[in-house]
Amino acid sequence: MKYALLLSMTLFAASAQAQLIVPKGTKATLKVTYQFKSEGKSSASIKDRKSQWRALRVVEMTANYVAETPQPFSALRKDDARNKQNIAGLQSQVESAHKTMQPTMNDMMKIVEKCNEDEDCIGREIAAYGNQMDLATVNKGKEQVGAAMQMATAERYQMWTQTSQQGTYRIDEDVTWQVYEMTCTDTQICKHTETRKGGGPVAPPAGAKSTAGPSFLEVDGTNKEMLGVLPVPLTPLKFTRTVVTTVPDETGSVTEETSKAWMLEAHQPDAVAIPGGLKTVSGTQSYKVAGNEAEGGVVTVNWTFTRL
Picture 1 (cartoon, helix red, strand yellow):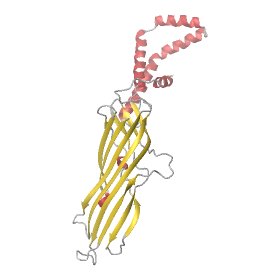
Picture 2 (spheres, helix red, strand yellow; picture 1 turned 135 degrees about the vertical axis):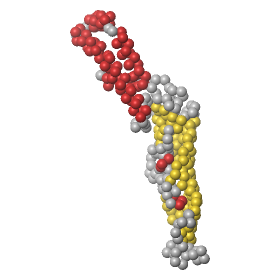
Picture 3 (cartoon, one colour; picture 1 turned 180 degrees about the vertical axis):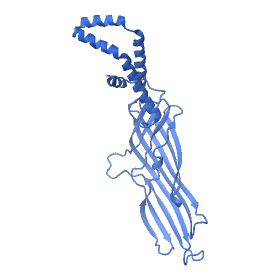
Picture 4 (cartoon, one colour; picture 1 turned 90 degrees about the vertical axis):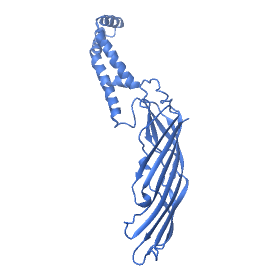
C-alpha cells in the first residue's frame, strides 16, 4: 500500500522553479573550448641531453540539446549525500503517513466487508465513523501526506540530452632536443627537431548514424546549479609529425599520427552555479596533465550554455 502511495504521488507535476526548469522539448546549445598549452626547456641537470618544446592544442565543440521531463530526484547525483537525504526523507514521510493512517484504512476495509458492497450501508457506516474519528490523527496524516507530496512532485531536476555535435581542432607543436654522447658535442651538433601540425573539422565515427556523443547536462532548480558531461570528439585527432635529425641511428620521417585523449579529465566538470536565469550559463576550469616535455601541460576549458 505504501509503495502504491509513493508511486501515485510521484506521477503528479508541480509548478516550475525560478525559470530554471523549462518545458520539455526546449532546445539549447553548448559551446566548449579545450586548450592545452605546454612550453619549456629541460634543466641543466638532465644528463647528456637538453631540450626545448612548445605545444598548443585547441578543440572547439558545439553541441545541441533538448530538455527532458523534470524530475524530483537527480539522475547524476545518486552518490551525492544531499540527494540520498532527499530520497530517505521522502521514504520516511511516506512510511510515517502510512503508519498514521493504517488504523483508519483497516476500519474502512472492515466497513466494506460488513456492508457487502451495499452503497447505502457503506455511506451510513462511514458517516457514523467520521463522527467518531480523532481529528488530531486525521490532521497529522494530512500533514504527513502533504509533506511527502511536496517532496515527490517537486520539479527540482531537469536533464538536457544531447542531440548532435560538431567541432574543429588545431594542433601546433615544436619539440627539439640535442644529445651529447660519443662524437656529439656543441661543435659536432646532434639535434632532433620535430613538428606536429594538424587541424580542421572534427570527424564523426565512420558509418555513424548520429553525430550525438555521450554528453548530457542536469539543472538543479533548487540549488541553482548545472552539472553534466561535456561534449568531446568521438574520434582521435589526426596530425602530421615531421622529424629532421642529425642524431646517430635516427632518420628523418613524415608520418600521420593521432592525438592522445588529453580532454577526458575535463569531460566531467564540477557543478557550476547558475547566477540568474537559464538563458546563459558558463563555466571554466583548468587542470594539469602529467607527462614528459610537450606531453605535460595545462588544459583550460571554457564553456557556455545558451537556451534557445
